[in-house]
Length: 90
Image (cartoon, rainbow, N blue to C red; front, top):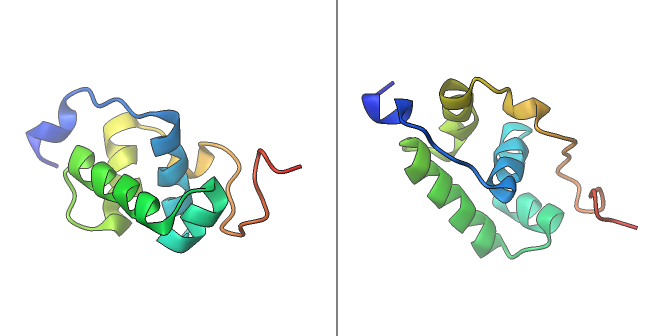
């Protein structure tokens, strides 16, 4: 890992949600459906996270997150790729 990853990086709650959904294998379309945003917005979140974590590929985001924070991205909360499963669904 580069020295730039060892600086303090802060993540929003939404970014943590996106990281977890990537970790469980969701596509941008699935992330969008799960979070109630467009696929373009989901991609923008991924692009922001790639830049913040200094990785070249989307699939490296969860590993880089774990390296930077020491947290398991799979344990950030309950996630599923199915659009009907949401913490806010009624």
